Length: 426
Image (cartoon, rainbow, N blue to C red; front, side):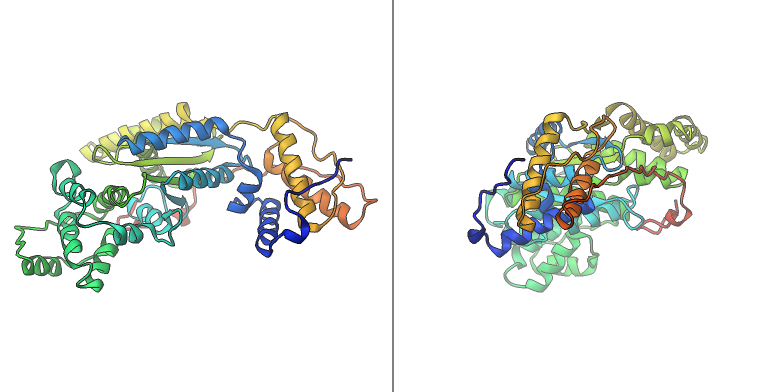
């Protein structure tokens, strides 16, 4: 039996480090991908890390894009997303985490934007990130001038509200903090009165001919573009948006699935309605989705056919986009690698040291689960921790761990059939 060591002597350990270790251990025991757990264990997905780093670099250079990750239940998708979030923050990016749910359906750009902007953080700043970016923006500097020029230009595809509010923000940030805050809230998703905007512009001698209306979904897409540009103007390297539990779209109705497939295509292809956007997206879903839903329900043929039967330009365009999204799931999903012997040995050693540091003992060597190709990292981790817990209480006990797989549930759920944020029924 080897001795468990620590790089920090017991008397030198701070309360914070002890608490962080305990948080990490309990998160790993529960399968929760907390930052403490990720820092303790790492990800073991170096190839995906490299691909995501290239994706970030491309976004910084003005080429938006994304990647779709796949893995089984308990394979470490959420853990990996947390690790990618940490790496992105350390590299100077703004990071958002969006968990697909009933409240945040993938097919609704309004709710997705709201979730992304509400969760956006930048390393070293208290957040929310867009408010921090607006506060730190040098309204007399070159970055602001370039942002205003872009927002005013036809290539941005933005409603005039954005250029108008940006100009007003520069003038009023110091003079009228309340209205400047209302402008930031508008950029973040809240409404703003057109009459109030016009009045404020007139006071500054900026009489604009019109501030035309814009549909809620289109406004959300414009807000996404504007926010990404604002974040980089304030010094962020780009905006990384991480989507978890994307497989929930399998429980939507057929039309909602079609719209969700189209959104997968939009995020992976970086098709956000304007060039030069510093946005990188990472989406994670279960690896059996194609077999269970796309092939299992014949979505590949049924969805495009029913949409084209409607014979409207919108339905035909949605059919093409949905097909592209299904092809991405079928052909471009990047699967998480199974843990090899070296990774399992390393994880075992780290966890053994962590368990010993948390409970002040020397955990013995244990067999844990048989190392099989189908066994997932979460299963190994929980078995090791549980066995050490039992042996710490009774050294003579001989624990045996059994694995019970839980199948993914892709049955359509009527409770998910709700109006989107614009009030439109699916």
